[in-house]
Image (cartoon, rainbow, N blue to C red; front, top):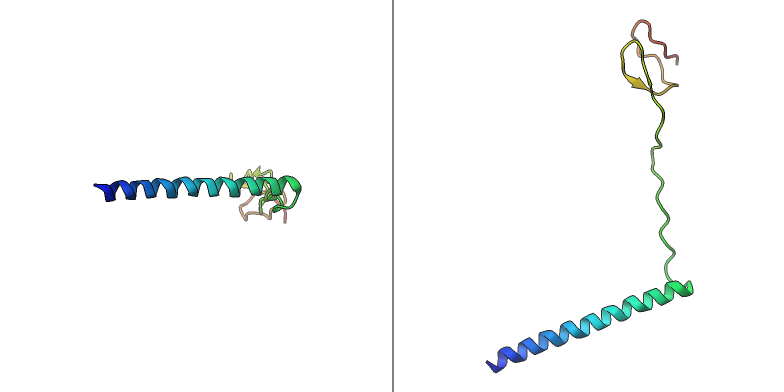
Length: 80
């Protein structure tokens, strides 16, 4: 019975001091960032592919880029 209480007390102490250390690390990081010593904030990533307006081909009905080459169907208005 005593050994179970001792183990429980030990686990509580480990959790308590672990949380204290974690909070201290977080506070140190926050202070370093405020002083300008921390890592630079992450830059937002730009997408690799930008969106583009599409036009519908009157011959086949497929949406293509305005500067796309002809689809090969008769009457295709797209020029290459």
